[in-house]
Image 1 (spheres, rainbow, N blue to C red):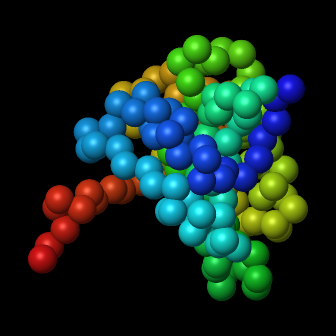
Image 2 (image 1 turned 30 degrees about the horizontal axis):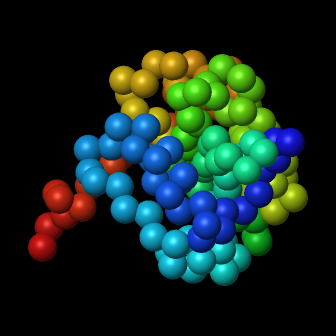
Length: 148
């Protein structure tokens, strides 16, 4: 049976493997203790898709408190990863539908996410899910470029 749930420390190895599939430039380090700490947060949700005990997808959802629209937070989605063996099986859509329903429950004003400019498959996927790639411009400054 396949379902989406909040990650536990026992998922650390599987989540690390999914992150490695994202082809990050930095080494991946996922600790069970950090997952436990995130699980205690009321604003950060590390989700996994569990397929009969196998973790096949993950996404991090952060609810950001805002003052622009009274008490409505906005959501930021990061580190969405679906196992290569499970791509094109509907899991990514299920994860995003779950996140969107969750954000409706939380009364979010919007959902934002980023993907690599070169990842055309992901860009097409998010566009098909209703995300507007031209609505805003995102900027990133990585830690190695922070002024000291």
